[in-house]
Length: 259
Image (tube, rainbow, N blue to C red; front, side):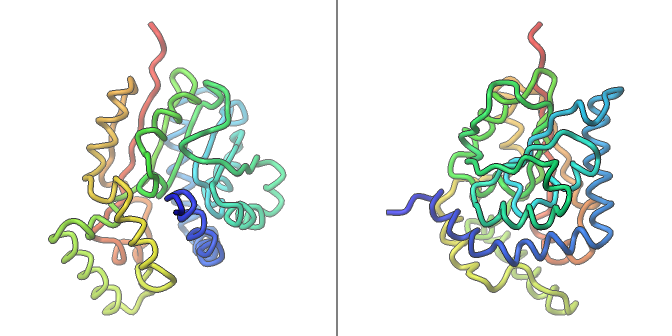
């Protein structure tokens, strides 16, 4: 029987081309500046006075490379990992000349092949919901994070509608509103039934977040905070219609220095 990891790799291999197209659209629109400004504020604000090239950033679950490209543009020392080779190939193409400056590596988010305290920043977007052992991932991310380093994770309660009647109604309303507004509905088509099947077997689909994230990170000794309205800043108008029932949140966690 295939493991969830195998199924995820197979699914995202099939999604690599279309997901890469979405990332390229972000790179070609105002979303490029919106997200770059957000990342710059969060990272540079945490390390005042440090030159960008001195800040080691790991992106976990880079997909087609959107965050990795922005981080490289900002001058950070960037490593980007993903489980799916097809996604990494798309990321390299999307990065163009910047690909030579970014270390793209195939790796499992729950088992990172790095030494302890290898990075000052770990960033991720729309990944943790999809992991079979998200708590293990957070522990691993903390392990490779330097003292006073920061985890910045953007995610949402994706697929909560599979377990919650009110969430199901809100999800269906999103589908109706997307059709009424004449915008592309990103929640239909291209084997989404396959991902629903996977989502039914992974833990975070039925857990309300980001309270869970803060609790887990705090339990493991990090100073965690959440921003549940970050979607208002970083999402396009179409995303706000498409995903109104699953607003994006941001979780930040600082690895405290040993006293």
